[in-house]
Length: 182
Image (tube, rainbow, N blue to C red; front, top):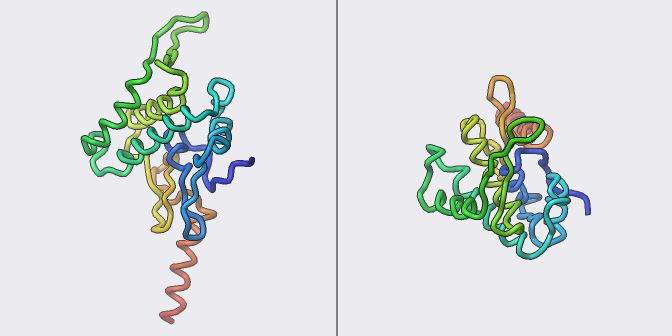
C-alpha cells in the first residue's frame, strides 16, 4: 500500500500527527489498522526495528492523541497540564542511555517494551523540536486543513502545509473574492 497522506517527510512527531487528515471534507486516518501502521513505520525508517502489530498500533495512537493535545496549545511548551501528562506517560516507557562508541559519544533509546518504541520516539522527537525552535512548530493556516509542519524556511514565515495544496487554495479563494467584488 502506498502512503496516501498529502504531507509526508516532517519530523517524526509531526509526521505522526499527519496520519490524520481531511480530504474532500471527510476525515482520513492512516492508522486505522496494522496495514497503515506498516506504511507509517516504513515511511519513517522504523520498519526494520519495530513490528507492525496491535500493541505497537495501540501505543502509537496513544502517543498521537497525547501530541495532538500539546502541539496546538497556546503558550507552548508548558501547555495544559492534562495534555502534558499524557505525553509524559508515553515518555515513561523509554529512556536514553548515553554511550561511547568508536565514532564518539552517542545516545541509544531503550524501551520497557519494544512495542512502545515508535510512540516513545515520536514523543521524544517533539521534545527535541520544542528545545530547538518551538515557534517553528505550526499548523497549516488553511481553515480546512489539520496538518502540521516544522517551518524550515529561512525567515520563518511559512504558513501552509504545502504551497501546492493549501497555499493555492487560499490564493484561489482570495482571487475569487476579488473577482466577485469587481
